[in-house]
Image (cartoon, rainbow, N blue to C red; front, side, top):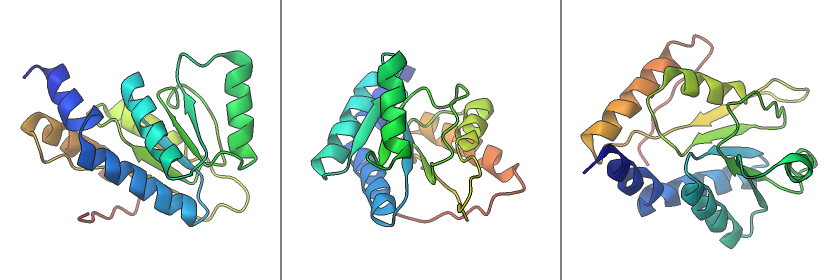
Length: 168
């Protein structure tokens, strides 16, 4: 398979992985958390958003397709807790949302820069006592596993993190 096909099959359309993303996000929402899910492809953003919606969780999609007033409205809804989950691909571009408690990396990837940018979304704010990053080790394919290991290396390079690996 080409690299794109591996990504589509192993990340975007991988049912078990997507179920895990949504179930972990839903558990965080149930515990009172505000969740930001990073997904790269629009197909993945749409799919994950639909899955959260089917669980009755208020979700907003934020991508390059969402502009101006609509983007502001969605962010205001999240900040006011009318929306509990943001799913999108623009979060590493200087978007500051201090209400985020949990960041879920649904997109994978190996870039140290993108991995660190995702963590930037965990801005300290009054009353916030912890933040959480949820990521996945993708064992289903060697290329995706190498990307997973690159992200783990980036996380371990950050002294402030308490890294815990769990088997789901």
